[in-house]
Length: 108
Image (cartoon, rainbow, N blue to C red; front, side, top):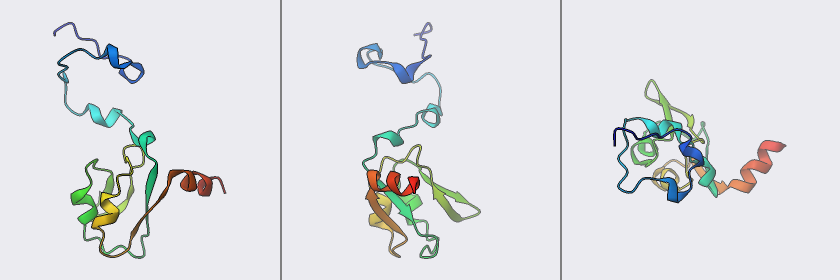
């Protein structure tokens, strides 16, 4: 697989992926913005947040942004809207809304 060329992968069709693909280098998921898959979006209420970090622990996409031990927001470029963070939040700091509603509210 020394001649593998992963350039322009974001435009590949399923048939373009090599059979038995092995990722040649680590950290490439940072370059794959998968938030476009989302149909629902978690919305964070900073005032309700206790910074317990349960959302961060359980987020399967590492989309909870943290700095100095406190939540700072949600990385919507990678969040797929699964709702795990909302389910795990015990303080009502996260709410799941439709992506269409979120986009409409952004436009206001």
